[in-house]
Figure 1 (cartoon, one colour):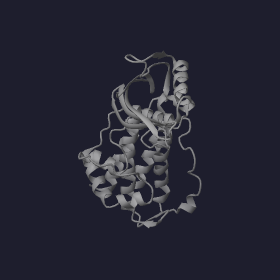
Figure 2 (cartoon, helix red, strand yellow):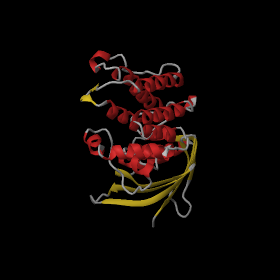
Figure 3 (cartoon, helix red, strand yellow):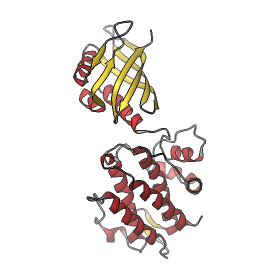
Figure 4 (cartoon, rainbow, N blue to C red):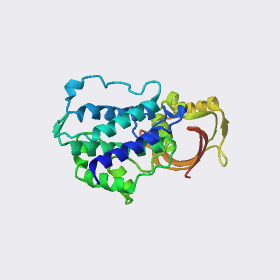
Length: 302
């Protein structure tokens, strides 16, 4: 595939996704844990804005800090649409080399870098806003073949995470190679962050992932546990659990999400008076609503 066509098709696909972002989704989490939707789009728009002067032969020093910070303004969709059009035009420029941060580069190599970023971040954006991700097979093949020889360079530079194994579908394999979990969803992100907060004993943070009318059923007393309704009651019960155990540690062993339902397999441990560590393993069956935990039914082994 012609490299300009590759670039422009990935840019167009990303712009179409941006056009579908709802007003209430700009602060939603994405697979890029440090970025919400707005930050992700700002990053990609920044690349498109940079492509214009770089493909015109300018240096990074000449561009300076004019493209730093927030580029989206009050109308992110219009800004992203305009940036995509400008990037498409710039991609066709006849130039011998582009001046990048690490040195001079072949413009076709630079365009392939941009295409890869648009394709993969397009998946990031799609799953973040709840749109079924559709990664064009031809684009996946082009980017995947190119990326295979550069994966370790990206990883050594700290640009991508660990390569997750076990994915054979070409699109999923490319995502896994780029450090993503192809199973990621907003619900999984909520549960991961909730689990981290609980492990840290940070109830203030944990409760930000819980609905005001949450229902929690504890594991005791047998056989049915105890039911707590409302965030205040649930928080009090969790605070009691932490207060009554020494050196508590909550560890998530597995999370499975299916629509608005989820299952979390966990291990909870503590320091016994003898100095040994005790533990219990169990499962929470959860229901999520509007990005928060609305119901948590806990069960334990033994």
